[in-house]
Image (cartoon, rainbow, N blue to C red; front, side, top):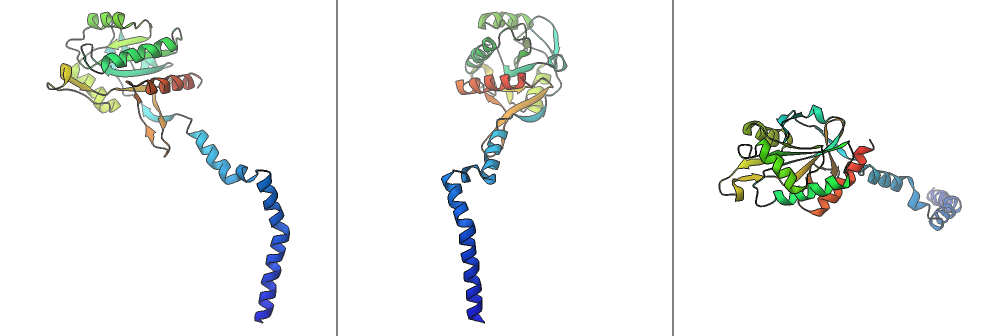
Length: 227
């Protein structure tokens, strides 16, 4: 009985070799394995990461811009926009952030579907006139760039609770305030959009200080304009 079993197993192996081994060799020669189903799924997954992740809707806000106009989140629907928190007397990261926003503005200048929102975290100093002067100084020429001011607590709630972008007063910090150096990117429907990392985790905001962040957000604005 054992001898018959061995003979049976040997026949199975022989048949497998005759039928399947040549096919495997041909697939390797033709590079077909690289195009196999499993690796195609990995490749497609990589393509999916090119799509921007939706973090959720922007918080509701209504503030006054440098021209005395009331601007709300609903007023910005239909536009792709970049949002930051800053203050005009900031001696550290704000000038760099503003310069980078000017670069982004220049990239899309004249496009009515692109906007910018700069919300001050020092509204007691940053009045409508101060913001208007600041806009002229830095070269904010777009009619869709809104420098917003309003009630301090209201603004801090928008920043810390709405966008989860830290802003606060600190007498020990340069300029007396602390805030995030990040940009938020919002699509035409009022959703916060972002990239994802290699592990499919969202990277909620864009670096507003380094050029890599500027390049990334410019690329993603272009993507959102096509949606």
